[in-house]
Image 1 (cartoon, chains in turn cyan, green):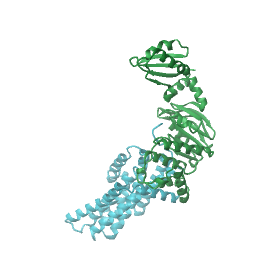
Image 2 (cartoon, chains in turn blue, cyan):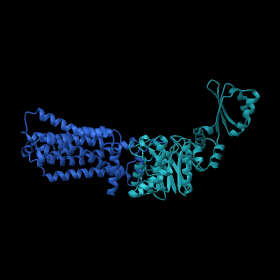
Image 3 (cartoon, chains in turn brown, purple):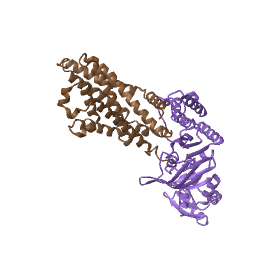
Length: 256
Length: 311
């Protein structure tokens, strides 16, 4: 796959998404955690004392909520919008079109969501003052990147498995698996992305006490293992999506 | 160029293509059929978007489903509209050419040339959201020809075009064909295709009913029992005239005796006699509908012939 062609797909996708609606969604995603952190900062009686609570709040708001919402809007409908808009056939008529467009849209979704997450994390860290500092900001940014890579791959795959009701399926999966199962203290939660992200947060922030108390929902594996697992999940899911799309007979239009 | 061997395509229990066998040499061909006849299924099979349930499809001696490199030699203008509201035609066509793997410079050059061919140069930097249906149609043609394919497939390319646009489109397709390139052109309007090619494939219900030149098809239609419908308050008074004729197969009086449906073996006899009967008896006949004006009726006649229900 020619990386320059992938860059062109990203450029085109960003170009076509330069609309007031998309820009407004990006701004809302950025402002949402900022507003909540600001409110907590104003109303909290804990002051700057409980850095772990602040860190968890920031982690929940940025790598989980902001990234997931952004990716739900960008990655999940990547294929289905082209099918519904009846523009898929134009892309599928290009030799590498199916795979190239899928990878390009995947990376665009990552880029778009990660940019919102980074800006939100930066602003929130500034508002939080000295509670988290540079370490928390860096950890949240890296976790956001990993979250975007893994969740985008997951949603892209869901988008290629379910051409209809894609968003409903992705939201259902997120609520049941990523927010439900990942918090269940059982072996099954190790298959979820959020389990790995929480493990990395505790590991990189040196929250040993938290890890001991909530070992089953954050894990005790080393950081490199979590990172490798997340990257493996991302690559595997994208590859499965590519294979699925390559051999899919997608209805191009109403039969004429 | 194109070979289909006993190709069938099933969508669950619905048949999209039914035992199609056809060989097409390089050239221009029209695919004629009413809406829902299987034209788009055939196009999707030829472009590798669908895999045949049964049979074998080859284009340029290759299987389009397995060999997607083949797409570099095919240009497709689908019937569906395209709309990226805030992207210009130039950006979109350049992007489409680029996806074929051409360099950025070539992609831009090819896109500009193809947009010029469809007379879109003046508007090509405007967002597509501002385009009329006809302009979008021309942009679709531009993306289909921009990478200089050997085979151009068009599905209802005249949709949305005004008379001037139709004329320009016809000129473009005729010129494309004259360059020695192949053209496959699907439409449900026979005369649109006649302006570009004299070779037809007639499909209906996913089946190939007839193929050949316009003359062949006309002969088939002429040999096929056809139906003529007359409307007016005096049409029952034509029945005595018709009942004596050997070329009349059936007569039906419908709609409170104001619609006369006549099954004919040879309509030309009716055309020769009808005016005389009307004039002699001072009859009021408001409307005359022939099978020719109703392509579906022609296809139904051909289908009966295909099934062996008539000669």
